[in-house]
Image (cartoon, rainbow, N blue to C red; front, side):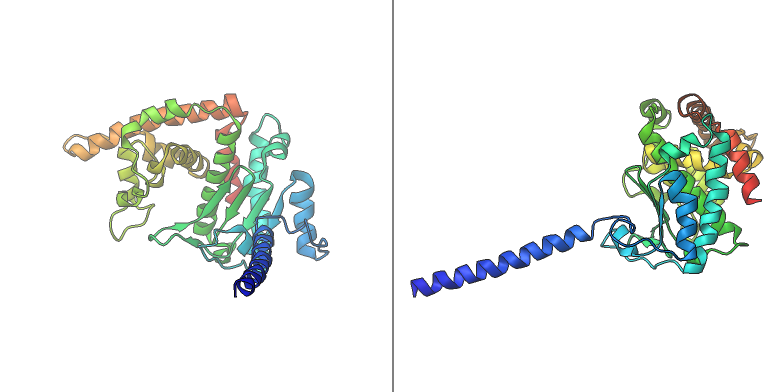
Length: 310
């Protein structure tokens, strides 16, 4: 009996080892990787275009296949429709690459150095299970994930503006990771007014959207441009970059920087003006940092971006 038991245990151990090795191998193959690494390069028109316009000049693979490899396994996303991929790629060139090339003191050299190695296009957003949807992700400075691509149409200005706010936000994280931004000084402007993790959505009134007047004002009172900016100093920086670049300067100034006449308007008006004074400091610090440390004229970047989508 003892011998039989040992033999069975050896057999079970051998089977378990095979299963374990198989599982590890499968897990390894599911790690994020570029589609070009292990497959023959496609010769279809779309893939040749993406190679010519993104991979060859910027070392960036635009990935729209095998989306399950590029998302959190606990989340579900829909692949993009093939017919939206090229128009979106063309828009990325027009509203992201060209403006940066014109605004950088290095010309095309800046993006050839810092452009993400991968842009992943997903057809849907990523549901976080808490009532919020992730619209973009920047991973370790090497990948930007763009979502909700299936909502794209050439005349959907709301989608275009929201998407490029997300892209400029995510690229701001890449900039932050590569240049010496004074995070502490930026943080100290609004240090007591950041929300605790996961609570930034409480600044959005029930039944309102994140970009509603009420929600934006709740952020301004804290010295920030959006409710999401209150979630962490890094998000605060990325959000102010995105809003500067994608907002008409007159609208940005009126909304975020210009104090109101609060005569007879009560405490909320006074609180908004205090927040705007803090936003002015952040605006000045951001413009200076981008110009002097990064070599990007963010105001020129803004002008070129707005021209590109209009």
